[in-house]
Image (cartoon, rainbow, N blue to C red; front, side, top):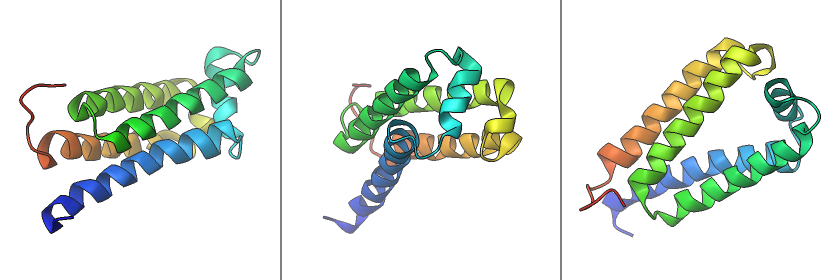
Length: 130
């Protein structure tokens, strides 16, 4: 692997790891019960457990999409939308359950800046969005 290509590859793996850890470990394997409590607060306790697992499976899917490198800019745009949506909802509806409380929104914003840099600045511009 060329040295110039190493940076985007490492960043891609790091981004995928964020989705994989949050999806598999925190939600599917239920190693961080706080995630289910957040879902219960937002969507109600009746279906919080299965919905949390479904969200976790979707996050694992996102990790695989990131690793594939396919439709890079679309992937990054979807990730930015998801991260901001999930964190704004958490900020508004369950700030006491978030790891860093109100500061979670700050870290989400920083992560979206990393995503933007990776997808729209670091990588070459494709001939189309897809």
